[in-house]
Length: 358
Length: 128
Image 1 (tube, each protein chain N blue to C red):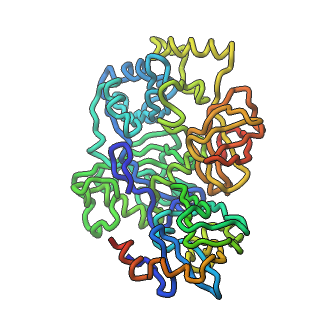
Image 2 (cartoon, rainbow over the protein chains, first blue to last red):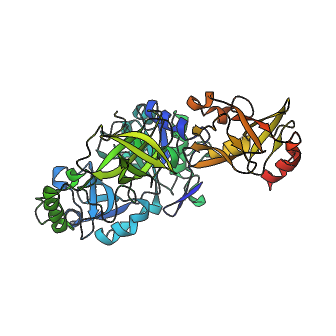
Image 3 (cartoon, helix red, strand yellow):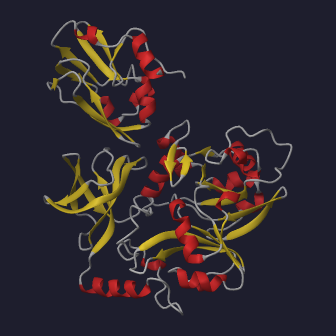
């Protein structure tokens, strides 16, 4: 167990990070991602509150859909990246990163319901088949859609979302309340839940998913999976001084949304500056060998430092060290680089993200 | 809980094992160490002929979690390395006392292992 964003989380389960990672790429795993926040914003004004606070445009979707979006600071930096679950006409369940829940709450108002539910992320090419054995209507929820489904009397909010680069579903299930009954006492339990949650619907759902063939996966595999998929992690690829533009995520910015959004003016200025001088861009670095690349390692071209890795590890699919780095935007994919690993220089090259495509 | 500490080996407080084989010392990391490190995905083997100094880094192992040094249990010269680990470092996890051996050292002193921990002492260390 490791401390993460104020939670105790399992780094890995029995089979280990690599086996959990490969199970997600080829079969199906389940993560307990209850540490993600849920800020519920409801009512007539909810839509406008979110439209003004967040960079993406809810007008592109509608109720029953999910959207990836950014909360920006006034200087255009990414204060958080989050997913909005538009559950019903006047109900939004906004999912910030664990450590940014209070920031999202301050920006959006609403109510922090994080402690009331667990979120189980079922991911992998067999995720829908596994969920279908447990709760058939949940398995039908399309990618980036959101539905409230009934699971034996318990309401489960299901979204076709995830953070692995695979197809999958995320299920928000109440921690407390009557279980389905008749089920055997939970064994594994959703590991990061507080003890008083054990035995409720969330723990029953966890056990049911394991029974249906999902392998439990921990924070270690969650990180290597998102890294292979080229997905940014707040505090690494997103954060103070980094706008969506450097991170290659300008598609989450609805420049011309009526009424604008927080951070827009600074972001427009940054866009103009980048048109004059391209600045930095987020790129992938693939090592020639198996040695894991690590956050903080300098990246060099011809002996000159051009940036440093913001994330890195071993790619179980590629069998090589991989990492992400902000480098000058004119450093093209294919460029040979060296990565300095504790005094030794490893050969690598620049690639476009993601490292691994579905 | 179920950590394997074979009776025929000597140990270091840094979780290396050493086995005397006809005057030479075969070296690896313990079952306890491999379990704590998690999936080992890379090993930077020492070069054959390299000097080993007891208590100093012999080579590096990397797991998905972290980078760890393997410390030489004895003074001597590296005479053989397990090059199978280059492409299959997971053997250290799978069989730490067998196929996961790391290198063989020709020790300076034939009594080199005397100063290392016996199985009982090592078991005491990891259970403390």
